[in-house]
Picture 1 (cartoon, one colour):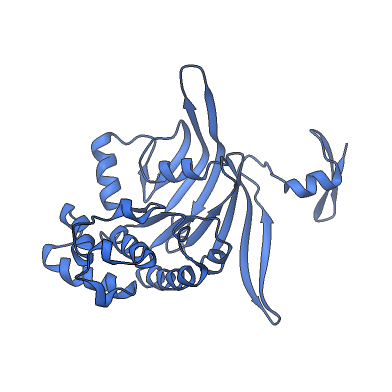
Picture 2 (cartoon, one colour):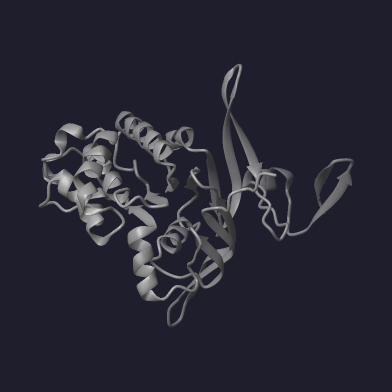
Length: 285
């Protein structure tokens, strides 16, 4: 009997609350999410839906308020700061929306990729070899000696991704990796990144508003009001690629129906649900 691999990311009932002296904001409201080893997903949703909060928790930048959040066996709700620091260095690679945050302008491209390796994870004798391999995989083979100010926007973003992958992280997190790029440059970057992630079997979560990213990931998960709501997967048909859109039911049995359907059917706070053979029907009350 084949035993299924444990998910690299396992979030259940994830809650995060921001508190100030006179204000309380619930950013995540019982979110469930799983990511399998080697899988790549895109996270989409409106501003304020909870995307950034989820990424901050998975990056080890802040602990959740309640619920479960595990990455590669690490319990993000229970880690002390020394363990959290090791987690950030060795388990996850993070790419900020603005690539300049990830790279050092005074260093060459090759030196930038080697910097994260100094904290462990890659043997010293391997630094140069792995650095050059990552640069080549990200289309920067001939630019190893250039500094970031000498690179274009697309090249800088490619370098930021190479830096984030330098320490062989189990999970890559990328916040809007194509936000500052034109569509052609973005498409080339995404294709090279997808090939590299597949070759290294690195799992990845990317936050995006870029619709073309959907074609380079295994699935797209929509977040609405602090919970996962919809999932889209692409499949090949005789007529070409087609999207399967599924409503996500969380582990408590809750559904978030698409807002357009709720408005079209005039559904209110209470609805009628009828079982009919192998399916349900939902009616306005």
